[in-house]
Amino acid sequence: MRLIILSICILITLSIAAQDANLVILHTNDIHSKLTGYAPEIEYSPLKINNDKTLGGFARIASIIKAEKQKFGNNILVVDAGDFLMGSFFHMLEPVNGLQLQLMGQAGYDVVSIGNHEFDNGPGDLATIINKSKEKSQIPQLCLSNIEFDDKDPADDELERLFNDSVIVPYTIIERAGLRIGVFALLGYDATEVALYTDPVKILDPIKTAKKTSKYLKKDKGVDFVVCLSHSGVSPGKSRNWEGEDVKLAKKAKYIDVIISGHTHSVLSEVVWENDIPIVQTGAYGQFVGRLELEIKAGKISFAQYKLIQVNDQILGNRDIHEQIDQQKQLLNDAFLNDLNIKYDEPVVETDFDLVCNEHEPNNSNLGPLLADAIHYYVNKNSDEGTDIALIATGLIRDNMKKGDTGLQTASDLFRIVSLGLGDDPIPGYPLAKVYLTPVEIKRVVEILLAISPSNTAAYCYYSGMEVEIDMSKGFMKKVQKIIINDKELNLSKKNNELYSLSASIYMLESIGVIKKMTFGIIKVEPKDKNGNIYKDFGSTWIDFDTSKHGTQEGKEWLALLEFAKSFKDTDGNGIPNIPEYYKTPRLVFKFINN
Image (tube, rainbow, N blue to C red):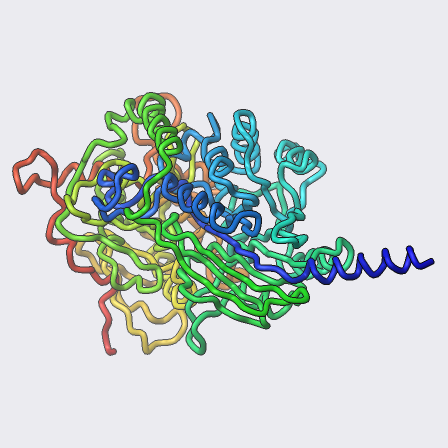
């Protein structure tokens, strides 16, 4: 009996001791295949220090992780909160050799969450990338909790097999710093909404999943500490410093101890506390690695210290990882870029000023108008019938064009700016498409985007080929007063059935196409062909850029930007075109009247 009592006492003592620890969580989010530093990328030199101004680069991130692990030993947990793919030329080769997850495994990541952009080419493509990755080396534990598969549709079977084989898990338990740590991962509401190609996979309610999973980890699995990798995000608020889905999550899921946030690309220089739960996020593109140091007593955080480690040229990069990335550049040249008459590191344009697009201040962008003009130029130059209007949404602009020291921009720099999606050909990027709308439908599209953009700045659009006058004092759907196309003011009567063409990426046009459904039929917008026939299939809207060839020869936003940039004059005589001064000053999308 004494032995039994003694054993129980020892177990209780060990259990209490296990809850007192110093834990360090090293984290990233939204790397988006930015394996090299930016920008401009041509200046990135990770094997030398203090000689460039670029930020990011996976060779540098690997060095940071190694140094932190040497410092904190077994007390450190290394995680990523999703969207590790999609955003540079490198993701073109992911289905071929799956390099990025291999590099993350080599760098020392423990758990990596799956974000919405991992689904950009569908669940089958994601499964292919993961399978290629694990063929060659050990990869981090992948995690996603609020996912459900379709038993009847085979399109998600390979991804489901990866779950059955525990390559991807709904949660994992890891021992660090004497703690049993439960880690799970979520796709948030907005991330799910913008993930258009998850079918037939179903994404379940994130807050319900979080409450259920965190409670299960604490109560049934007996973990000491719960970390949530939440690809949901926080955003600047009006009434408080930060708000958003992860703040709401912290309020409702009481068994979570830490939220590692992602998706919104928000740089949190300090911890956001909600319901005694710390929320942290590093921005995007590997510009920072976050380090959250925690003192934990009796299973609760008694002290927290946070730092963003800037991934800059003071950090000497990991040579082996850098060399693997350089080899990938050559493979990209051989597999794709040579056929497009470009090289990965070859300068194609230069700029004397930065071109930027800040989603939270879209009116101040000089990059957005340049991109809209590029699409307008490209479609009119290369397609049979051209277009009246071109547009691009802020949410599709993924990077800025930075002058750096030299101003030289490579094709890889331009691609990163508009890098999302894939069509039916091997060249990355959403296909450019075209629909025809009546003047009143064009007005409705502009009105809806005006109404949405204050709360969802990703929906803010830049137009080319169209001038719009608006009166913000007017009510809902009554703000647009005048639309001018080709120097002609449109008759906005409902009886006017004239058709005008509108070109954008297929992602953008599909979003416009659901306006009628989104407004429960109240606001009618029906994309049509040039003869006025309503499109039933958005695949039919893709622009064929060479009708002499079989099939549809696709155009992409980044190819439009590349060709537009090459059309500029070489003003300094070095053989490289220059971005015109015209684009230095932001150009307002609308002319405001009566304000």
